[in-house]
Length: 314
Image (cartoon, rainbow, N blue to C red; front, side, top):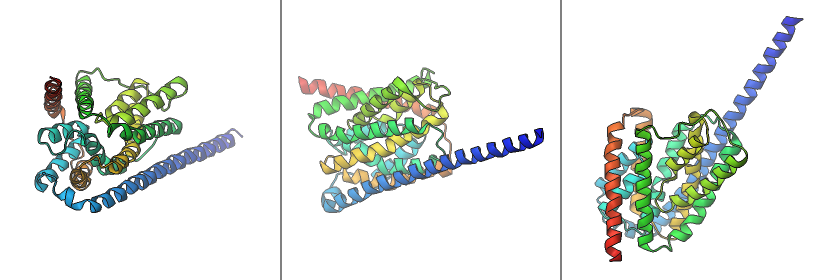
């Protein structure tokens, strides 16, 4: 009798395990399908806009080979956690590949396809509470959709102020990680109550801040860690929120003609190749020394922009 109960209990546990596994697999498939659909809509929107303004895009003052190499390296490094927003801001501002007014839109539009490729390459399992995931994604999407309407109307000096702030935040987050000051996370797989509401509010803000050149990825990561989520399940929240919110915001920048078409095209092609090279060939990379160099360059660039702002005010 005891053996029969044990066998029945074992079969029940196996069935429950299979049901949970099936549910996780279905959630992953649905999310990945939505990633393809949303980013596919962006790709179609971008291609139509590029064809309509092909001559203007070709006349942008950037050498094709230089741009191709830059985008490959930038998103190769982005795959290992070096902010493409920060690197892009430094390079595009320094070499005047796009003006400050179009820089936020360029930073967003150029990373859409490479980040989608990153998501498809790395999101293989979703162990996070589905409610927490949906709240983070939807809130950030709303923020990303609303943001561009205000950015395109901003004075160029205000945009520069936000960009310099974004660079300083990026440098600070890298330094926090280097000195062990970054939140380490906990063991929770979801949020409820006040923490869930606060995550929604902050995700909305991060989606909006993306549109002024302040990358949301690192901020989202710091937030979910600080709220005690397991570091292992924080990734789908960060990647999911960015993968859905950035294309939504970028389509608005396309609508308002506030981005570099040439940079976006080359990033979509060569940036994606960089991501695939990092994900499937290199697989791991020690970026410790590179992070110090990036911090120095980012801080220098931020204070250069701040200095330019001071001169403009005088």
